[in-house]
Image (cartoon, rainbow, N blue to C red; front, side, top):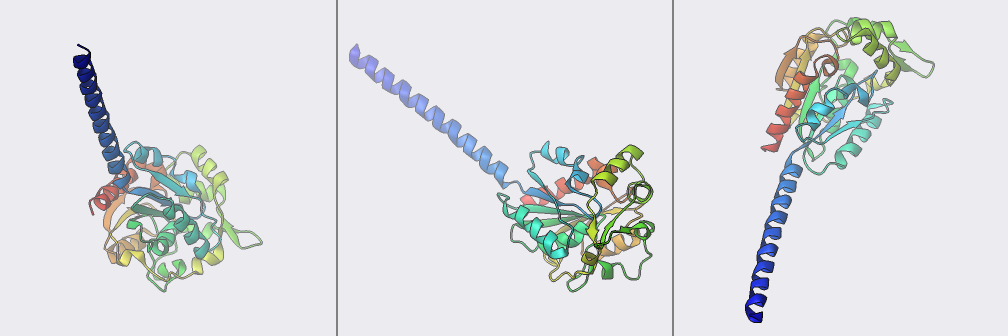
Length: 264
């Protein structure tokens, strides 16, 4: 009886060990699958900060996507690119790099990073190599909001609340526009003259959200840039901040990019 009990105990122990090994393998496989999904790094634009994406981020996280919102210094293209690259470096695998407005110029340069698998432009600039943000807009009407910048003595530009409400975010509640005014990041005016040295969109797949009611970047310019870079285009009847007024639509485009990038 003692021998039989001993053998039975050994058999049970072996079965338990096998079961735990299987559980461990499944957990490891699930973790590997999760880490294989691209992360999203978001680069905000001028007159904003990372909180500008507070409505979109939870929608991405709900789908199991790791999200990092960069806080740009907005002091120069080089400084903002460096901030974006630091965020990219911390990601576990491939990255979908998202840029809004001025952030489009930043991701055009920073997107050369090896971890970046694709780019998403949201009502953004997409300069060619050798051109600046300012040069990219040449030949198109000056957007109404661009005439309302206020400069401080050090050359940083900001938007007064009326301009934020009427030109930057005219399709969000006034109270929300007031918060956006308070949290905006002023941008050094000289940054708009900084030239892109490499255009990541020339070698990586891109998505582009055109804001048809944009009063900060001419919608015609947005359409032309989207066509030039060969992006998959979604046009929304939105202001300059569709991430604020139509977050679900913006999240869908980003998730499409995540799915496509993960399949590569």
